[in-house]
Image (cartoon, rainbow over all chains, first blue to last red; front, side, top):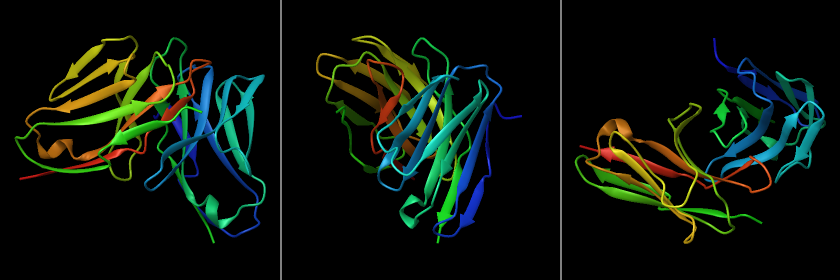
Length: 112
Length: 111
């Protein structure tokens, strides 16, 4: 089983719909992250959380919200999806001490 | 604002050749990461560089960090086709462990 699991893996939806992307992890890490990847732009940080009570905005948080339901679960919501939110979304976790982040397999989201 | 610049963004090289990918960043940081991404796949951690002068090697890849110059390099020795992928460098912000990524270098190794 994957250490960082993202659901769904693929989603196609319409403009204006509310969407939730879910991430769960079995690594026991406190730190969790949401990124989006667009062709030619690398990964950009949307939100990050260092524990259940600590949530921080990243570089591109507008239009997104998150919920840290438990140490192992971190959800990303698009309240009213728009086409330019079409992207590949990654969840990641990390332990403290500067060790590398571990990424899920990604959710490919298309908004029509 | 921390900016991370990689070059080149695209690289086509022949098998057996050597090449270097460069990663420059704009703000002081003491941690730099290299990741590999295969098409349609997730990101895989290659190297973590946590101090000035750090050098790490794995197979045909070697990464180094010069914090004074704010520069990291990823050197490829005697490239093989299996190294074809996109390589990202990422820099950690001093205030925590959130990462700023470069745009990635898409590497194609041809016979």
